[in-house]
Image (cartoon, rainbow, N blue to C red; front, side, top):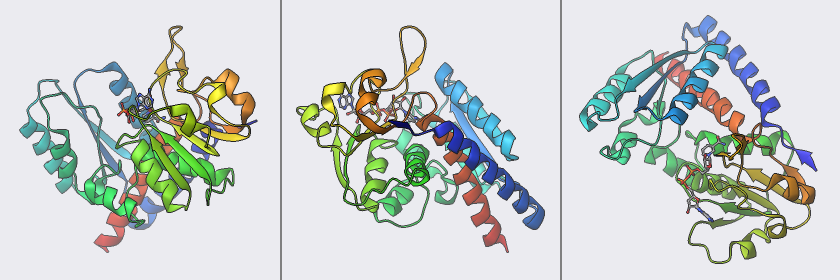
Length: 285
Ligand code: NAD
């Protein structure tokens, strides 16, 4: 069994982003800028935003966080996004999800300029992903693809089973795998007999949010496992959706939690923001 080490790869990607950021600054006078909108006081969201801000600092980006109270109006968030869309110092806009229930999240995401949509949630970019065109791809599944590439894992013709079908994890993950000519199954809460499907997997990708959802008897020998889940166990430790101790014995490769997909997500946010800045710089020439 070999670990797919997202910590090491994310550091390598960060280093490259840092170098390219310096080049962009020296050659075009442009510093990549990321704006984050954080609504409410959810500690997990605040911690993620803080991690993203620190990562921006490490690679030399400009970043700004717009913190808003939980009872903020739709119009106030929309005004801030419009301001960021029009601000030439901002190349990427990130709305930390989830938003409070009074807010229409779809309308918010649709308002982000697709050329600044570094999370890849705008329907324009979703459409480009599903048709195999270049655009912005959600950071978590993009990070998984970078791990496959780093470890020379060929996807063509492989049976890939994605468990979890959210717009930010499962669906874009499935689209990326399909674009690489994998055979893709998507499972979710209403899937009947999950084990029947997971036993089929050459590569099993799980992003659900349920501790120990995937057990030893649900996978075949030699399987590659990507554990996207992040859960807080009773002892306070971070764990994934896979019973790592028992399942890893059967795997050829597996991502640890923490240190697998998590750090890759932030690395891809940096990489997407740099890509946006490079595009904006060339448009200004
Ligand atoms: P979500 O709640 O939006 O979606 C969960 C998905 O899992 C749904 O499609 C649901 O149908 C499915 N599901 C729920 N219970 C199931 C079950 N028993 N069997 C099969 N499918 C089931 O969640 P999300 O935002 O997609 O996040 C999923 C997990 O991934 C969470 O643990 C989250 O913390 C983690 N996550 C990790 C990263 C990262 O950087 N590693 C990024 C985003 C999300």
